[in-house]
Amino acid sequence: MDNMRQYREAIQKIYGKNDYWIVPIFRSVFSMFLLFSLNRYLGMTGKPGNPLVILVLGLLSFFLPFSFVPCLAGLYLLYYFYTKSLLLLGIGVLFFVLIFIIQSSVRGKYAILIAAMPLCFFLGMPYFLPLLVGLSMGLSAVLSLSLGILVYYFLQFIREYKEQFILSGDLLDQFEGLSKKMAPLLHNKEMILMLILFTLAALAIYIIRNFSFNYSWIIALITGICVEGLVFFVLPFLSVKMNIGLSLLSYLFSILFSVIALFFFRDADYRGTEFVQFEDDAYYYYVKAIPKNKA
Image (tube, rainbow, N blue to C red):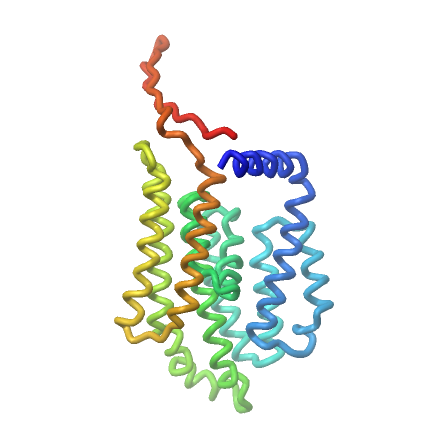
């Protein structure tokens, strides 16, 4: 355990000294990987599927803030929708404008979660990000996380039903049956369940970790893990198909990664907890001091 703490301290020092170039490189690589995953997931062809386009957009994100990455991905998707159908483009514009309006009501620094959550779904690790959000981010990040879940299921809907939107015919005729075409998205039980449970898991972790009792962070993480675990009981009850084996494996790996994240964010020695009291001319102070575990 002491060796792990030494590695943690070394990583933190390296990041602290070189974050001015590590962060832009990570942002650029993240953007390229996200766009490539969108390309593969939707089966893009033509100009949107050109690897050179993905490379240029990824390099562009090197100079832009993290909050612009979801905008970049959104513009990339809208261009793809445009190449397929004006109706598909119209639906995409309405959806992403709605997402933008909702996100603009909170702090923009968490907007990256709108892109990160679909990427976690693509990688088969959707359980991890809600746990990480609860452990390391603020309350407004939960909204961005929820929007990311909606974006993923919107993309899933587009992938499964895009042929219905690119059929030839008058645009007005296509709009007439729009409500029927959108019904599978609006009545998606899996989407609603994931949205509720992942949001509750992140909220539970955030709320509990902010209490001052000993082991609050550990209890918060366990609570979030248990909330997410309800997926395996509720989905079969709702008659929603799921690959139990792969989902369980993803869930276990997410637990492992979240424990590692907890080790980085809150490695405290609660056995050495002290209560300190002092005062000045205006106040009495009662302080609870918890030492960090050192290597």
